[in-house]
Length: 137
Image (tube, rainbow, N blue to C red; front, side, top):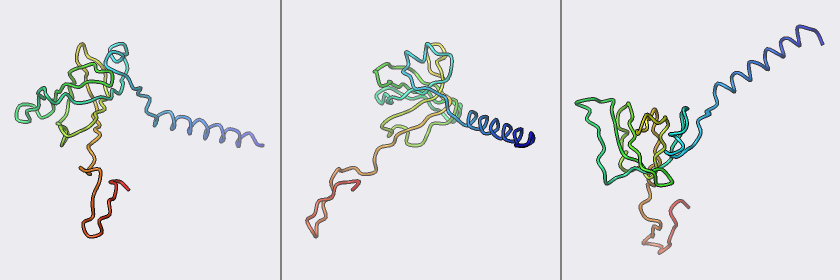
């Protein structure tokens, strides 16, 4: 094999490695207690505390949204998102926030929601044939 072929193969291998390293999401999952211990960005999975108020006033500041969330272990924390409130946020079943702790609040850079199923009932009965069909079948 010629020297130029070896150099080209090395350049291609290094390029592929750099591309893979830069596209990977290395954010780990944690709860709020673990997030306090980490300096890097983490994902926290949990639930919106629906009985406590959310703060979003687009007239005053359209890029400030604050709410309370409990993680999977039941730890409650205030989350502050520097962006607009996502549509149908109150209806979400589960919330994933990405960011890091800033004192006693979680500074969020990204919000993902698991929305409720569009099927309200688990079973749908067809009247004419009297056949029961499970939702999602």
